[in-house]
Image (tube, rainbow, N blue to C red):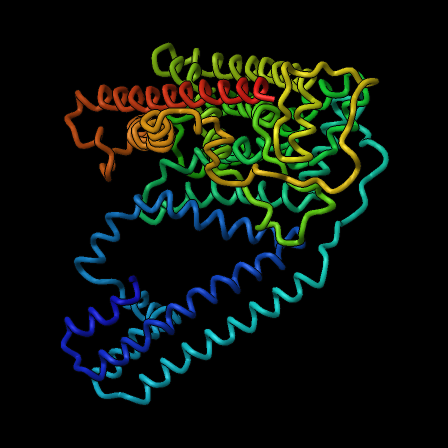
Length: 524
C-alpha cells in the first residue's frame, strides 16, 4: 500500500502512461528489495552479535531506532516547516541517491522521456534485491553450520574484593554482564537508548532533556534486567541444594545490578547536567536518581522471581541473540513499576521544601531495595521448586499448596535440555491470567496499561520537567497550551489520570492472575 504512492504521484503529476507503467513495475521491485534487505540486515546483525563489539553495535542500532520513534515528536516543528517550504537541497539529493528513491527516479525519468535512466534504475533495484537474497541465503547457511563461541572460560576464583557470599555473587554478576553477549547487548541497548532519546531534541535546539539521560538509563536497566533467573535457565537447582544460598543470591544480584548501573547513571547525570547548563534541575535529579536506583534494584529481582520468562540454558542457545526474544509485557510492567517507586520522592520535592526531595529520594530508594529484596528472597526460598519446574518446562506445576524448600527432599528434573513451553514473548492472555476475566475487563486492562503512559509521562511528567527547567516549547503538550495559571493544575490532573489508569489496570490484572494461579493449583 505504501509503494502504490508511486502510481498516485505519477497520475497526479500527469506524467503519461509510460511513467505509470514504470511505476507499476517499480512497486514489486521496491517491495522485494525492502523485504530482502530487512532479512539481510537481520541475518547480518545475528552474525555481528557473536562478539562484544558487534553486540554493542547491534544494541546501538536497535536502541537508536526505538528512541527516535519515541522522541520524534520533538522534531514536529521542523517536519511541518519542511512539508510547507520543502526539504533542504542536500537532504533531497540524498533521498534520491539511496535505493529507496530509485523507484521515484525511474518514474520521473520516464515522465521526461529519459528511458535509459528509467531502465537503469529499475534494473539496479532488481540487481540489489537479488544481491540481498543471495547474501541472506549465505548468512543463513553460515549460521546453521557454525556455533557461537562461548568466549573466555569463567574464572574459578572470586575477585579479590569478594569477601563474602553476597559480594561473590555480585562479582559473578559483573563477569556475566561483561562476558555473556545477551546481557552485554541489553546494557548497550539501555545506554544507547538513553543517549539517543535525550540528544535527539538538540536538533530542535532543546537541551532540557540532556540531564535526564542517566535516569532514563537506570530506568531501562531495571526493565531489561527483570528476567535474571530466566536468563540463567535451570542453573537454579545448584542454589537450592545449599541452605541460605538463595538469600545471598538475591542480594548479590542486587549489588551486581547497582555496580553496573549506578556509575554510568551518575556520570551521565553530572556530565550532561554540566554540559547543558540546566543547573536548576539539580534538586529533581538528586531526588529521583537515588529513588530510581534503589527501586530498580528491588523491583528487578522481585519480578525476576514472580514472573520469569523461561529461556534455554545459556550453553544451548543459538548464535543469533535476536532469536532469544524479549517479553514486551514484562518490559512494560517494569517501566511502570520502576517509575512508580519514585512517586514518594517526586511528591516530596514537589510539595515539600527543597531539602526534603533528596532526603526522601535516598531514604525511599534504600528502603525499597532492602524491602523488595527481602520479599524476593523469601518468595524464592519458599517456591524455588515450582520456579525450577517452570524454567525447565515452561509451565507452572499444579499443586494443592506451595512446596516447602527442604534441600534433602528435592526431586529435581531429570538432566537434559530445558524446554520452554507455552511461555513465549508476546501478549499471552492465559499466562497473564486474563483468559478468566470478562471481555470488557480484559480490554480495559490492556488499554489502561498501554495508554497510561500518555497522561502520566507524556502529558504530565515531561511538561512538568520542562516548566521546571524554564523551557515552555508547546509542541503537543496540553498543559503548555493553556494559560499560565492553569498549567500546573492541568499537569496534576494528567498525572492523576495516568496513575488511576495504571493502578486500576494493574490491580485488575493481578487479581485475575492470582485467581488463575489458585484455580490451576486446585484443578489437578
